[in-house]
Length: 299
Image (cartoon, rainbow, N blue to C red; front, side, top):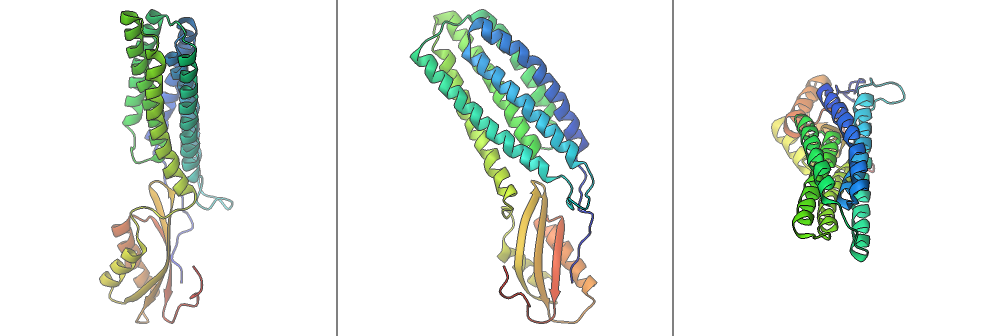
């Protein structure tokens, strides 16, 4: 017997959606100022940050669309609704972070080989304004749900922008005082390395969810141990499969053997409650067996 509900949709955090929308508008708005400032001053740091802000705007747009579609109800074609779109958005955002980091490094290498004069004053002005905007955007996003991978990937994009603005300010300061034009590409590379690290973390985690990897906190042996020790009628647990729909929605299927012929719904209720309390699984499909498992050769 299986125990499940056919409405698998889960409410989307509306606050997250609103925060991402405001962050997107502010990011796109200031991006144009950085492009103009970068072209006028000749600063790679500003142009790199503008390119990153453009990517951030697209990433935030994708994140907003993910929240918007995830709010749709489940239907016959999508029994779990659109929740997985959040993870797809996070994966794409993570990949774009990696590409941005590589582009900045390539541009920096070219600057080392062919040094370019940079106008420090307009670079400083635009960088300071960019820092202010990025702090505001990061503050908006940081007030949301930190465990949501979609929102987290958007925050990392903005954090990379914030660091890019800081790097541009420091580079402009060094150019103004000492004429160290090499500071512009050097600091750009440092920011690129930080972006690379953060982007890889998002790609790795979202890819694990997309291929339906087992959540890190769930262990099959531990599931078996907890159910056998806490429910007297349970004698064996097997064919356990756990995966995630999103970063915060976990699912599990399992076979459970019991030693008494009881009303199955009573046993199922105990099993579901035990799994949810111990392993944070929101949806379980359970097969209760009174005889040897008919699927001994299945996985």
